[in-house]
Length: 464
Image (cartoon, rainbow, N blue to C red; front, side, top):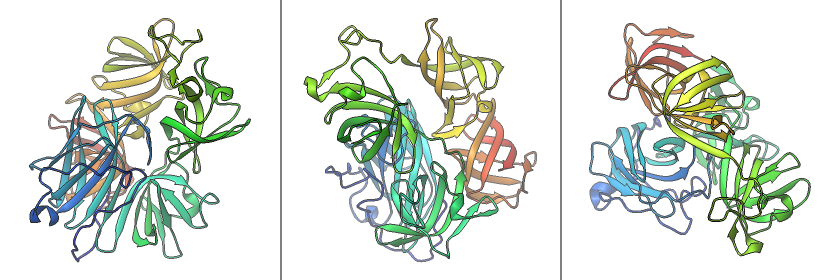
């Protein structure tokens, strides 16, 4: 999570006109919060954000509309409604640990923004998957310093020497920039596409000059889904096109689903569904489905009975959501029972909790899971993605991520990990470092039990 900007002075908050792709300046202004008018609003923190549909979106997308969802600052009357461009703005937000509740349109979830400081401007990108919201990227701006958190999307030679793209923004480095991971010193050369990093620095032109880049999550496999209308098509064995501002590339290994989907039928103006991986400055398309064709009057590939109108096979993607009631087998091939459906995992199955990649070890009985995969002839699912939506109260709980907002005196600490509130006590075991040495930004693995409040009581904290 973002740590506070250490600035002693306070300044008037300003709304940044362009922080991430799609966060502003898109021809539609964010909906004004009900408490954003008057002097009191201008004196507080401004939080603006963009919602993205799906668990694997990065800094930009043309996904489904999430308008109508209400965003509330917990414990206050400050609220806003997400507009047709999936934007929201909250004004007059008090300093301190702030919780945002997202509700409506089947969503009921809370995220935490720890240690907000007076006169900051905060911009977030929030992923919405099923009923759950999670922070994908966050930026804070104060008097002179800024903080940015997100995934590495581009590196040299795609970017200039010493520059890196994080969550859609250019981050510059120089000889004074420090690179760290936990307590270990790193270098620019240790950065990889897909890593999650925390940047502290100062504005420089249209970018951010980094004083420190802290590596938070070394997972570099970042699945991406993009839906939208294509343009700038360049055909060939190695092809490319754009969906909005995102560049998509493919080759002879790209799979096509539905008889109305093939490279020969790909034209500008067609609407496509792309599933792929984040690469250096572009998305590599693993699977493409042409959902409507510009050269066929925008006709969808499926008719009223749900079959492909060309008589071909459809993508057999399916999903199930419910309680995990049984676990068998050996990793990576597990056999799960979720809401009565048999689910099989493979080495390619991705497990996520609130947008961060976890491992199969984090799957526990009693959890509420959202599984997306391929339906087999016998009705079972082979899982591509498993989202842990909720954990059973009193059940065993594991989470990996960066510690944020570490407070308290050992052994009684509190901090956040990927939106979860974690507490330690005298029975908590610390590995890879002492309780007193734990710092915000450290990459950790927490094992504990889920409390009725939603918080986690840690039995073990392991530094990674």
